[in-house]
Length: 276
Figure 1: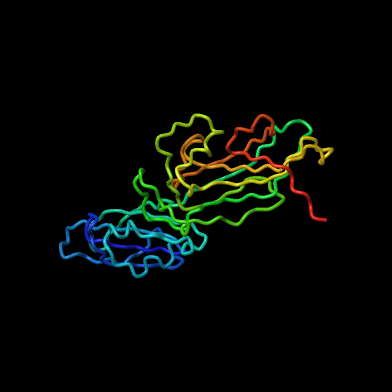
Figure 2 (figure 1 turned 30 degrees about the vertical axis):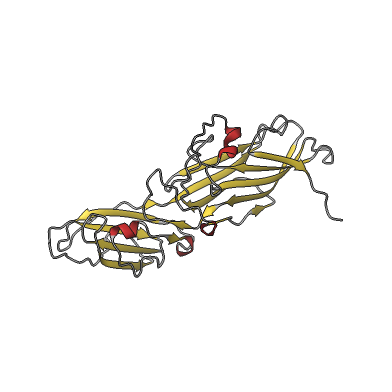
């Protein structure tokens, strides 16, 4: 959609902006010509940053390299495209050729339901699938591994549009990273206990609601409304971090509801009565 190129005079955090170039809908990035500025010291290393699909976020940028790295990029500026960034160091000469690898700053989350182990005669009918607590902002570079990002503020998170009825196959989302880490002072070894040990209330999760019929031939017999709350992360026991440029696959294997009262990921209630 768009590409912004920023030249910084130096390679330290205090390096100031030299020039900002923006290209709308470039036909190709290979061989793209960018007008750069030669510094007073012609041999001084320059930092070049390339940002794709950030919209107008950096159109009027004039800060330091440190300020740039801390800039918040709203999802609304991405236009549904994948935010990518890359950088390189170079000395600016006439007809200087540079190369930079652009890396996605979004994470991929894929979800599917596996019914191959559903008890014989049972039926599972998904009603509502939703990705919740999704960050609405991203940053140009990955924060330090121990840093929680974005900050814990309800204004920076939102629940995405749900899928209702006819839910099947694989669903895929691309979202800004959400680094929540682990809850300090806890050790969790069983996946069923993961939801009881969240580090805070801003972890991204999948919510699925369905009707479960133990006997598909008699839906009025012991039918239940079930809801699953599933948190992707580096593992399925105690980590809640969603990193940019990584893929997370969540597969819900439905094996019935018997013997699962202590599973923090599952809630079981009676099916609400239908309106007349």
